[in-house]
Image 1 (cartoon, rainbow over the protein chains, first blue to last red):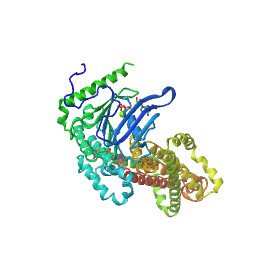
Image 2 (image 1 turned 180 degrees about the horizontal axis):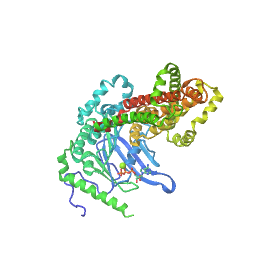
Image 3 (image 1 turned 60 degrees about the vertical axis):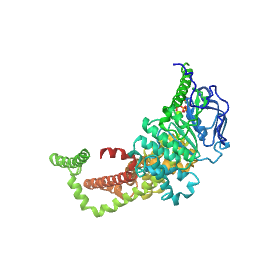
Image 4 (image 1 turned 90 degrees about the vertical axis):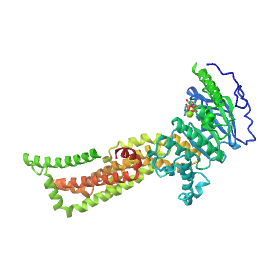
Length: 294
Length: 257
Ligand SMILES: Nc1ncnc2c1ncn2[C@@H]1O[C@H](COP(=O)(O)OP(=O)(O)OP(=O)(O)O)[C@@H](O)[C@H]1O
Ligand SMILES: [Mg+2]
């Protein structure tokens, strides 16, 4: 199948060549900046280059989806921004300062729920409050009152109203994943790092959680980096979709997504949406092909 | 549920059966009580000599528990040190394996040399013998933290101490308790060996004296006391384990019930 030459009717003009400047979002304060970042795992002969001179900027409150072939370095970018990994060369800035130096609250969620089996769902969700300032300071006074209510309220939002006192093993995978999302959000993070958080869920649960995540994002506007393999997910949730090449990862396309919010599942069946996901798909297939040939 | 019950009844029946076969065999083959006394003789001796046996039993239990407590404390601390960093784990593990493969009995003469005979070498033997399983299990429990979970905590700027208290230690608990059951039994072995070699108190010493007097039923009575104490401690630690680390077994329990 060749690329569809029909213009994308409902989408704002889409640049077809890799755009250098970030899309002109209305005066967003710069929040994340990757400046020619290269990352190699290992040393010498056996080193794997995961990222090659990646530059990426995200404004405060932006919602960016990272898509690309498997192994292209998406998770690596999250690790860089979360200060879990040092760049081999180049710079990473968060909130205007070198990564790690600043005081951002980070929430993180993965494909696996990684809940602690010896804690109830509620205690699992409250864990960040025990660790992250300024919540940590009041942990002793508030854990039985305010923090507990806060956790319960958040659990209710994701449809786990009566499950706070249960243990993780009493919940299904999808329910655990909801709890894990709550844990990522409980401490009002201004930066959310999500690595395929819905990857292991069935389509209906996934779509439901898209809606929930969108609502939560609209409410508190954290900056989000979302890694996903699901193009519909990226187009539903993100303001910008960054398409990466096969390893070593580079940024191929930085696509703005202009659909009005709140988006609904119906949005995903509109022609503009389908065109966008189709276009992304073509890009990734090409990117994979380039790597697969070797 | 029924299968668990049957299993329990079966193992109780097996124990009783062994004693009955033992008793009958002794009677049928006319085995002398200087070789193998009958269970009823042993139990009679146990009851008959209880006032004399009791202080020895208390001494052995006391020595074992003190040694065990010291051993577990030391084991937990060393295990935490080793398990909290990958480097320490890799560096220290060979040394640990080396130490733990020394037969601990061999250190008794050294302790006697240093501290004279009596309670001290017994406590030390009991301690040293129980330390290693605890260290190894504690360190392993701590070293096997899910990397993704650690990422979550590191992005929250959790300190090493936060991670240890909230993740490491709770996760290491099942490993720790599994090792306690083993360690408490080993502790007993250590105490008795040391009492046998160099002490004038305790079941080990009592058995040694009884055997030199050819009071075989009394030797076996000592053995029964040791078995009883050993089983009691094992059961106590199993029960504590179940209470403290129930979460590690809940899944299967749930599926069964
Ligand atoms: N700890 C590591 N040691 C060595 N190589 C690594 C390590 N982590 C990642 N890599 C390599 O770096 C490359 C990028 O990894 P990364 O996890 O960022 O990919 P990804 O885009 O998230 O892939 P996926 O979509 O499959 O999750 C991969 O090819 C991988 O082989
Ligand atoms: Mg990944």
